[in-house]
Length: 420
Image (cartoon, rainbow, N blue to C red; front, top):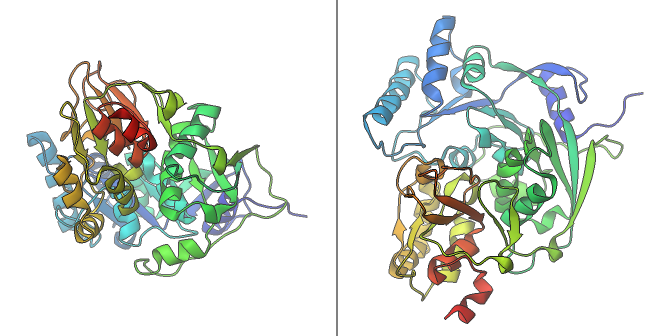
């Protein structure tokens, strides 16, 4: 008799046509493969060596890392992507102006959906697990193989079950939960495993689910998967492309470990340099900052901008701080503009940018000098991640980022009144 399956096992079984369990190797059909302006050119060259026709309808090309191009080298990368898309007739190429941070655009443009198997030549492709997909990062050569065949081999991962109960207190969200998890198990605590979230899922907004799934890789995870529910369906109904299928874990599914978190017991967290596992309660922080950065595939959604705008409305950015706000996609930018959020940020003294990965990867538009400190809503704080090797990056949620921009130091929004 077959034993029960996790969501990861079910998706990989259906996509491969094999009755698959953790530890097996399967050759599975991929729904979409995505590359960006940094990882794409390598994939294009490898693909050309194969001498095959591409599976055009499954390919998504998104320039985002060095957008707008910051120098000749990045311009050449973008040109190579543009010419590849034209040569092969790739419809899903998103030129600057229609583009955004790749993982947000994959959601906005309806590529990400429950039950889909999606790979991307970017480590944070695991983001789409927030919608119930099995999505994971791959190398550029693997992406090239999917360009050619529409398939890729996978080792079916074991899953870690994360049981959620309760609900977030005001000012606490998905970023705080995932920093807490990574702090508890370490940056290698889920190596090649899938996080599967269960329990009081309805207490976690879909935008927060995307944030949590996005940072699964920061614990070494292969994927982070939330089951599809009515909130998921509502979130994607206006944008999703094509048909999709949701999966639920079986009651007798086997997990490598189980974790449990009471959301009501969490407080705002900040991850200190130089690893995401260095999480501490914001209440314990006493760190002056030079820059606050709001955006990225982790926390650049409209929900994040609303949280930050509520904190900073009627206040001013600290005179010693640069506050940079980067909506993650044109859709987010336009919605933020329509809601008056961009005006709130600019009135406070923030710099608002169009969609780009920019400083998150140490690219441009917010690079740090030696000795500077930044609190950011991004996902990584490795040495030199946002600039000089002697700079420091602190990871936090959007409310803390905005409050810190006002206070000049890392602070809980609830404590702003006490600062002045």
